[in-house]
Amino acid sequence: MEELGYDVSGPSLLQMDNQSAIAVSKNPEHHGRLKHLSLHLFWIGDAVQEGLIVPVFVPTQDMAADIFTKALDHFKVQKCVAMLGLTST
Image (cartoon, rainbow, N blue to C red; front, side, top):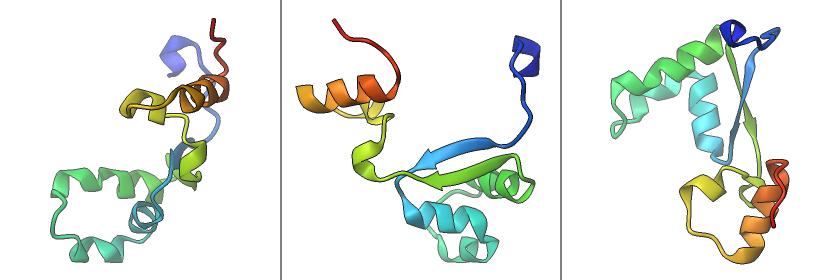
């Protein structure tokens, strides 16, 4: 990011609406209980332990990324557009 001219002075915030995923990323002891996840996905736990990423809980109704991942009704699209700081016409 610094090569693109952005100041990176702290960890990146990763907004999530899955409290179980946040718990697993913060506590490596839970990894052994997750049989359905591939081991190559555990890099995020390492990044959290190193202080590069901070997972933050965001309620599902306030998840702006839904506009990119789900089919939404007009009201939710307008809400996501506003949360992203965009204007709609």
